[in-house]
Length: 207
Image 1: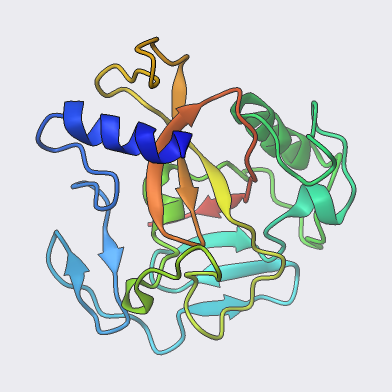
Image 2 (image 1 turned 90 degrees about the horizontal axis):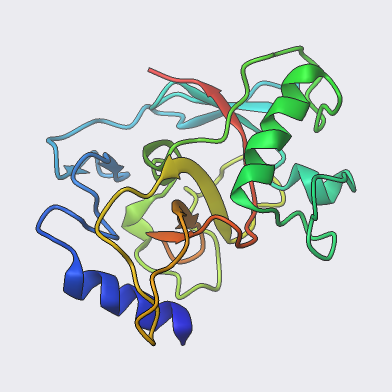
């Protein structure tokens, strides 16, 4: 309920151009090739390719993702507070996790050495959505059918800091510094307190 009220408050105070579900600088690929709001793109015959080394290449965006979408929990890693050992961490801890992976301290099932993993920005994490599926009502993933990822969860951090208009809670107090999160199970972008707990999924590369 609190999150719904926050969304409504943001929509009421946000200036033209701030959009929770269709940010103007974020490409929205569909399986039919459409791309709102900035023209059209054609999906490749195979959207995702499992590289067999714990990584997945996105043939549409050029990004490489970890095949394991919840490494912290799957490999029982200690990253900051790691609330209830679910893999959920704060925004700062998500950034630290990427550094841990790049240092070689953890590998998350990736057998090839890369040192440039990062928390995706909001445009990158948003690009995973297959919008032809419509809303799943929070009950299932909005990833394209046949994807090779494993253990995908619901709400993920992006690296993008929220820099829009001030956000206030339901009693009128300003919220702490926020970053954008992405709900994979009911696709939307929303700024949230950076000390909240969400999942993290790393990527690298890109066009």
